[in-house]
Image (cartoon, rainbow, N blue to C red):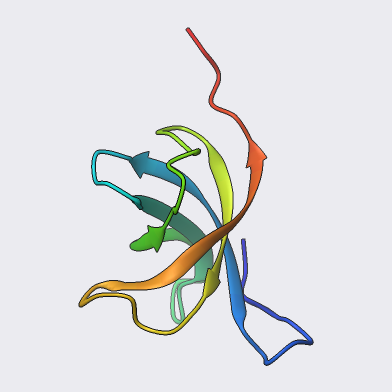
Length: 91
């Protein structure tokens, strides 16, 4: 789940899991990455949440999505959902 450079305009893309879809046209995406501790050498998981634009409210909590950087749409929303990778597993 690393940052990738795209050919068109150099927009960053991230892959993450939707943790909240309670807002209208917005989802919260949790992106996890692994980093190595500089001194100990232990591999640790780091995570960050992003607000992403979801125009037609098609993705829901638990779905894995790809988000892409875009112009600021609100105070906290500068990403948009571009692709649905997989649906949430129903219990």
